[in-house]
Length: 114
Length: 114
Image (tube, rainbow over all chains, first blue to last red; front, side, top):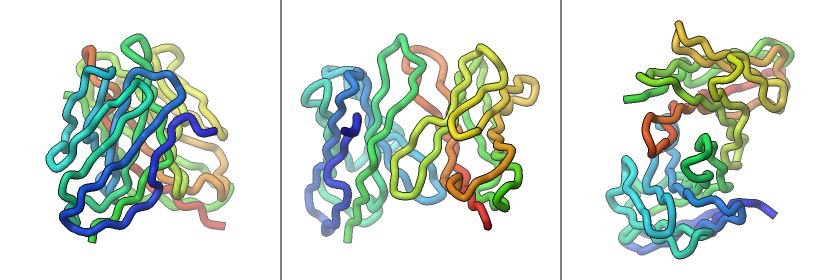
């Protein structure tokens, strides 16, 4: 079984709809991240969480919110989806401060907003 | 502030030829450096990492990278390309301080021609 799982893997939605992307991990890591990937723009950090009570905005958090329901679960929500949020979304995890911040990625969610 | 520059968004090589993917970084403190690979329709996985031990780092699938402080570079090489090496490659550096978020390059797409 994969250590970092994301659901759904693909989603098509309409402008204005609320959508949630979910991430679960069995690695026991404290830190979790949400990124979006767009062609030519690399990976951009949306939100990150160092533990259940510590959530931080990344470089492109506008239009997104997150919830860290447990150490193993980190959800990303788009409150009112818009077409320029069409992208590939990745969840990642890493060990805490003592580690070298090597990150482990889920398989991604491809989101299309019409 | 730390940054990463990957020279060449697209690189094309023939099967059996040398692979060279370039990465330059800027950092005011000794960095930790990473190369990740993303195969089509998959998440990112770690190829190799530099952690201030040996300057020549060997990774998976025959890849290696050399940390050159004087050139602020961490180029990725493989002596002989294989068709299965076709993928997107990302260089990343940790930032200074306690946060240790990864700073990502924009990626290089490697094509391997028969």
